[in-house]
Length: 166
Image 1 (cartoon, one colour):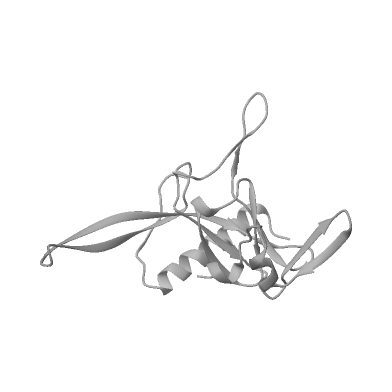
Image 2 (cartoon, rainbow, N blue to C red):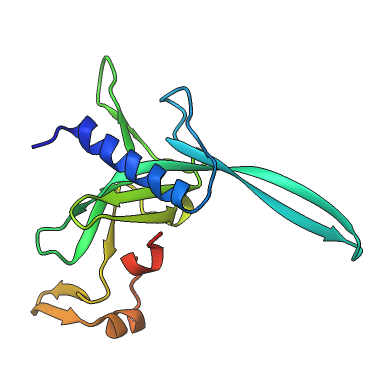
């Protein structure tokens, strides 16, 4: 069984590899307290008045996370916060809003990479559901299954893995 740092390194390498495959020039931050693990620049061209063109570059920061398959195999789960130990009192949990633009998610169990905007992520932890599995819902009357189509018509928000595959 791998320890946490080995799992993290595998995820980090898988996401780095995918970005390089797609042609991005990936930057590695020198410090580990910045709130992101990988970055790249995106350059956009803007046309003004139909003939003036200028280019603008901005940094896209990625926080790498390792996902695990849920016990029932219907979704991938991962943490969307970090825990900072404190000398006294309880450890502090913090999110990544303002520190990174994307969560880069990797699951060694299925060998896929996903990119989720940090601003779309849930607080604390998150599940990416597989469309083929649908959703199991429960209430006082019992548990019932919703297909992907039925879940899309419901009032609840679900994150579908296939929509974020990278």
